[in-house]
Length: 80
Image 1 (cartoon, rainbow, N blue to C red):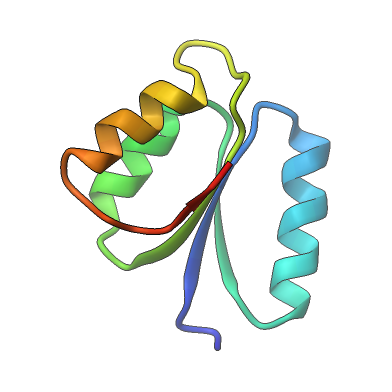
Image 2: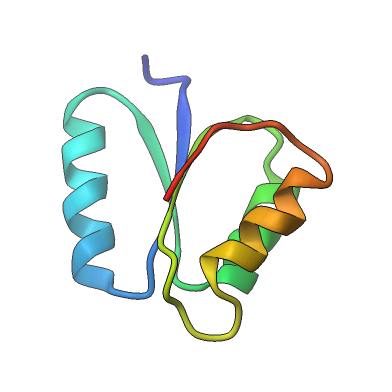
């Protein structure tokens, strides 16, 4: 499962660490973003993201805006 990449997006670093630790223990590869803008940069730079775990309330760009932008280009699964 180590080739399955998950993007975890949350402005709270403790929450990102908790989710990342759980997923890496299960064998997934995890990439983190601290806000919506960073999430989009990572998503468009890395074409192998299989799932996005997306927080709704974030600074700069909220989760709904991130999802709207991603949906213009991709059908990747998103859990909010």
